[in-house]
Image (cartoon, rainbow, N blue to C red; front, side, top):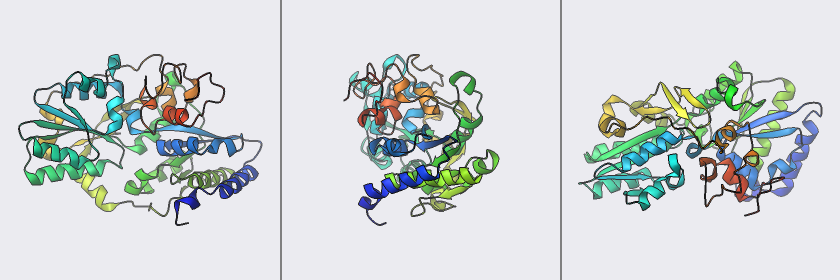
Length: 379
């Protein structure tokens, strides 16, 4: 298949769904977590759950970097923006995520703080070049996919001799989150859900490759199929998982072979390894403190580290008690299980991060009308 239309062929999709229905044993239920928010978006957009058999259940995972960032880190970014002579910049989705007291970066901007949206890390470097008398802080977030661009920006700033460019690093790691979902102590508070297999993320895997998931297949006896983001990609991955589960196999398979290899992008991984080191622990929304799940700049790049330049608050702030974002990120609940969904909480008035990001489960359900029995009005 060479063109997008072929990945969205309705007849092929129905054939795949019929094949899954024929192969899924009626006597068992298959709980499959799509880790990445891009897959959640595709599933909602194309109505894939509606054509899958009832005993094949998709569980939405925490694979949205905007969604998993805890309230305390949002508050810390707002605090940085309030420091003298600071320009804080970040990607667009981050601007609307509520911090404590529902203060977002966008509202802080309206109050007079110099907060700007950028389309790339190099835009932030250009800001530092254009404002030598100001301190430009790039609020860096994302999984392994967006970490290399942050590293490139730091290298560029170093090459230009910039002393006014800083990174507030919030890059997190996919494998650590999967492990936390499978065996973390937080299940006592937020509950857990049976998981029979994982659809592995696409973009992340182009960087890290398929090899890191082999641990989960072996140690946790869970099959993993890395899949692209088109509807036929997802359906094919579901069929591959159903077959593994039926056969009692626990392997890593790569449906997205057109972009992902076992070893990933060696150049990108080398750049990240040179510049970043593991944090001992990092808080994730919905997952709590996850050991060795995030990155920080190494001492040799300390001059660019906002957390070393300023005494940035490291507070842990509780989520809105009425918001079910944490449970949704774990796959324990669906968006329609939240009392706020579609009533108080909408994309125009988000109460939690899952409704802000385009990849968030709540935003996907709202955008594509996945309301089912909820009382929420259609958008």
